[in-house]
Image (cartoon, rainbow, N blue to C red; front, side, top):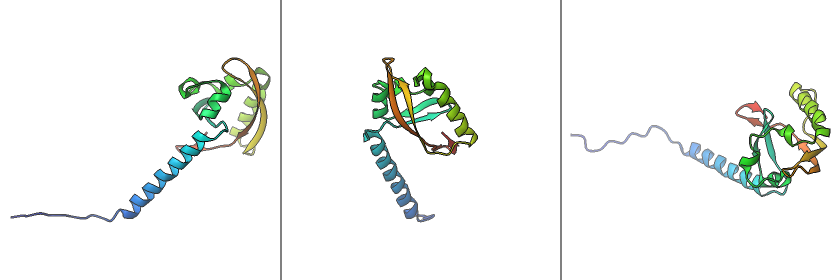
Length: 130
């Protein structure tokens, strides 16, 4: 007759503590990015995949879904599109050192041209540059 049987495979306390630290870190990062007055966006393969509230405001959008998946270059003034396209080609080829700060003209949702200062850098998403 078997009454009760408990088998403890391993102590995962350290693993759980590490997981909690990662969750806490992600929460702090998300709060910082969402609450800053600086517009932050992520462009991958030429399209926006993330924009914080401040960037949405700069471009004249209310919802992230309105800007996400749109082409980054479509929001750059015609005067600056060639420069930006060349810059991104140089970044992709490794001939441009990042981060880089530039001045460029964007076109907001109302088709108004605005001059902005921007810093471009790389981040890694799923082990790929963005």
